[in-house]
Length: 198
Image (cartoon, rainbow, N blue to C red; front, side):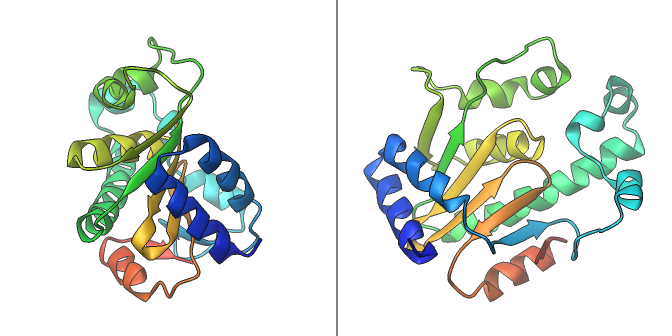
């Protein structure tokens, strides 16, 4: 099935609130070969040795980084804020903005990822727990909670914007963009926030 048809069906099922069909369609979406990437770097870093020296991700941080607000901690927060501002702009201009996410089977409440983001975890855990969750984001605090957990690489998140037929998939310091539309406006927003679409 062509990408545009998958995107149209995903947007339709998001509006219908059918998380089972949506899950099947998103599996098909992951097979698509040439998506764009929203990233903190304007190009792919080909040297793993160089990348390992500059990469920063949540699980690389240690308790001392949080306590002393180290350079690694501050670098991570700056990157997180870029994604928060980017998606805030997209959320503000969208009449419907859905989030579809897979909830981890087990939460380890004694681990740093839970302790640091306990409020965010409590916000996104539904009362009637399901592994698959589909919500229309009306609250800014919910948007930010989901971004924090996706950027920290602890939930597999999809933002679905039906009016644009666009899907963002985030898990870590990068979001895959599935779209058949011109991304010039998104690229301007990304660049303004210090992000890149490549």
